[in-house]
Image (cartoon, rainbow, N blue to C red; front, side):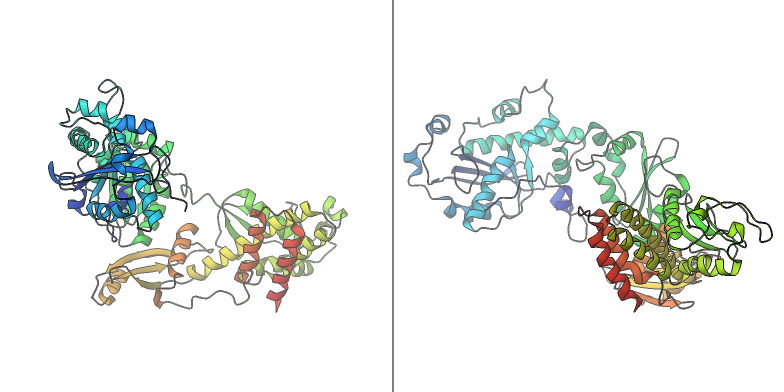
Length: 599
């Protein structure tokens, strides 16, 4: 049976189910350690090979118990092991096998922290033996004295981290002899010496000691105090520089625990290490619940653009596709919505994405692509697209404004707020036509345009359904029996609260509504907040256990709107990400989806 790799425990394993910390379990002084050593036949951990076990149980410097026994490994003992340890086959012959020793050993280890010198070796043999003989491994917390010594002692103090070297350095009362119990007793003195040394590093808890043993940088150790005193509640944390500038903004359901993780070996990002060096304090903003924390994080990042945040820094840097208001409308990429009757599609995160969606529209409907302002009285010379038959040549008055609107403008306008089926059908037909001609690369290009267009329409209609409501109040149960409450106005989080458990939530809800932010309506699908904020709110509202309490109107989407094509969009995106480059097969499947959606 394959054995899982040894993994050094982390601070997370010291937390209870609700995330609270037990001080007695974390204190080095009050922690019960079982210091263990094994002697083996020198082979790999395959469930056997253990020849001797020695263990000493200690707490607060006091010896609580001793466990020692020889073990019959059930195999020949190599001569060099006899020379090294003094253990002979005659000594092992009457000894019990490991399957008889394990129950009493596991009982001796129960409720303690396992300490060993080069712990992965000893733990690997014990876990393999448990697995081989059907004993569950008790998931012990493990502290490796060799790893701690590598961090706590310099080369000037000790030339190496061998047990014998450390025992001499700390003046151990028992000299290591390559016998299990003697080595375990020597390791006890080494452990106590290391704990005393750790005090100079401000390491006085078990969690700190476990993290100290890992590859934590000196900068992380030096700045660990920044996590002191932070609350264990949902909210936002802000790393600030000497001049008060926000360096990094983050969010968590437990501020204290999350900030503490930045000073552990699990944090390996180079930019975060650089940020920690510049930070002088961490500011906590407590929130009612996780959704409020997420929204506040987005707003703080947008307001301050912290240099070490990468995402969500510039939510206003979006673009839109606008159908211009003229006799022969065209698509234009704009950076802001105007309060007019024009049709808009977006928001897009980049101009390139907007132009990709526009190319999809051009493939589907005969919108002109030129940028001239056309007159209904004066003709303008036609461009090459008209000569190629890809434009109805409104510049030469080959099509009336009414016919142009019906064939080109109205399908796009309808797609933005209603049914995009005419455009989707045209693109699907184009993809299928190209695939039939084995022009798969061109079909893939059209498919990418379809994806960009569908993403935008689905997203815009989903956002618009919520932002049209002047107010929506919702609530959901939290883990302790209270209610998380949100007040949303025009897609913006206007208030957040949490009602206490065992109390009726109505007073808390009414207070939240009375103190909620006033939000005025505006144009477009995101009139009062960033698209990302409204999408975070939507994700929270759409959870199965969320209850709608009150709304100012109907929260609805078009019955035959873009959401009908969500499955088609997902499959198209999956086809792009898959290794299968066969456009034709994926197109056939999606064509079937499109046909079924028409019914």
